[in-house]
Image (cartoon, rainbow, N blue to C red; front, side, top):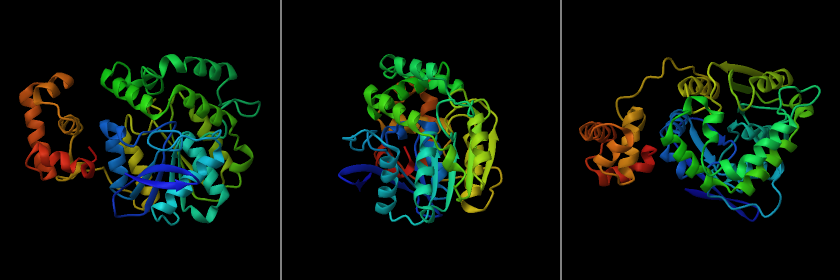
Length: 345
């Protein structure tokens, strides 16, 4: 964990990987750098990005481990945080990868200083959040009012995770993690302020001036931000290419995240990988179940407790732990805990 100075504020960021081109990930609505590693899908996605890049990602002001914003949050301030992290991490002309509102922030950085950005990867990009006469893809004002009215009740429970990502419906483990992550990342009042920022953004007149090579990514069935948003943006940005994925999950690390990683790697490195083979050794060699078991082991849970959490036998847990030890080159739980950060656990 490191901190960058953005004006008088401290912005928490992490650097993963050492090889490959610089890739700065600007998260979506809220983030928490510590708790992210407790979720297997998200930690696996981050590790996947770091496998072909030097990945830098951070908590924006007012979220996660970064300082709260003393003033009303603006897109300009959010862009300042990106630039502060770039300076602190010694980044020169990176690719910026923005998710949802993060896509708007990345666009702002590229518009303000085109020479500082090599490429843009925009997930679920949108010119504006709200619908207009010439922009029917956006939310209605009534729907925004409904979302704002539900925040106090739903933010603490994690129920919105399945609303945005239908494949998570009924996944209580993920819902519990998302609820903890959301509560730690921002308060309901901070969330309402973030929605205010999103609703105020309108990039329709500026997208046409973006000269940075841009990759747009979106799932066709996204229930939170319609794919029509990215289709509209693709018509506005001269140097944009849109890739649509099947599925209905809003977050890129849920569902078929390997397909997303393949497109990002090809765009960032200029090399399109074949089918993403799992290596035999190292953090990326872990299966999803091995990573889940190792995550719980690092947290101090016994094999019996892990089995109860995952609805598998204690013997199966021990098998997964032994396999994780072998792939990570550790011989004990103490070593596993020491190596946890490096292994993305």
